[in-house]
Length: 330
Image (cartoon, rainbow, N blue to C red; front, side, top):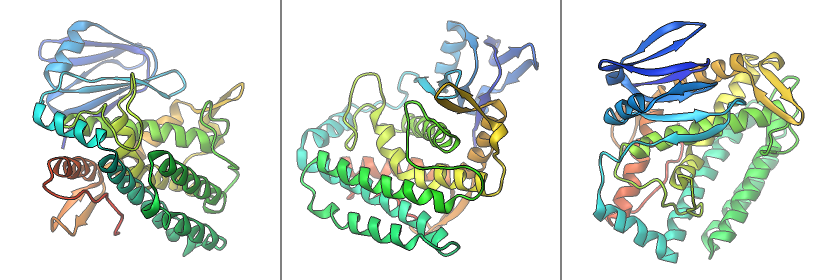
C-alpha cells in the first residue's frame, strides 16, 4: 500500500533526477520515493518550484497544504488521470434533479448519524449518562424519511451533531472541558482536535476521490461552490465518526494528548508540532486498520472503505445499484 508523507518542519521540496527530496536545516536531505507515495501533507513553511510540482503531477500525487496553525489551506490536485465525460454528465444530472439529490444527501446523513450512534452506544456500555443522547439522536433520525428539502436535512444534521457534541463531555475523561463546538477559530483543545482531524479527513477523502472518476466539486449534501471540493465534505461526514472522533476519544482517554501539546494564540487554540505528530501517527494507524468486509468476504483497511464508498456512489450515478452509505457493523 502506498504511504502518506507528513512534513512538519520548514524547508524546501525539490526534484532530483527521478525522485523528490526534502531539505531542511533540522534533518538535512531526505529522499521521498515517489512510486510509493499516495499524497504529501505539508505543515510549516515549505518552498517548492514548478519542477517539483510537475513531477508530482506526473506521478499522480496530491499535495495538501496546511497553515501555521495546522489548519487546511488547500490542495494541489493534479490533472485528473481517470477522466470520464459520461460519468461527469451523470453526476451533474443527479445534482440537478431535486429528488435524486435529496435521496443521495439523505443517505449520507443516514450513514453519518448511524455511525455517530454507534460511537455513543459503544461508550454507553462503559459509562453512565449517555442513554439520553442515544434516544434523542434516534428520534431525530426518524425525521429523515419525511424531509423534503436539503435545508431541512441540514437542520436535522445540525441538531444531531449538537446532541452528539453534548455527549462528548461524558465520553471524554480528564481535564479537558468541552461545552460546544466552535470552529472559527477553535477556542479549546477539543475544538482544536476536531478541526484538525476534520481537515485531515477531508484531505484523505479528496485523495481517494482523485483515484476514481468522480468530480470532487459536484456534491449533494453540501452546496457546490467556488474554490472547494465539496464532494469530499459529503463523504467525510460518513467517516468522521468512524475515524476522527474515535481517534480523539482514544488520544484523550488514554492520555496520549495532554495540555502541553496545544498552543494558544489570543482566542485560537491549536495543536503544536508535537501534538500534530501524535495525531498523524494515530491517524495513519487507524486508516491502516484491517476489518473483515461482510459484503466482499475479504479483509479491507479503513482507508480502502473510503475508496469503496466512492465506487458505490459511482454505481448509483450510473443507475447500476442504489447507494447505501457505510454503516458501522463492527
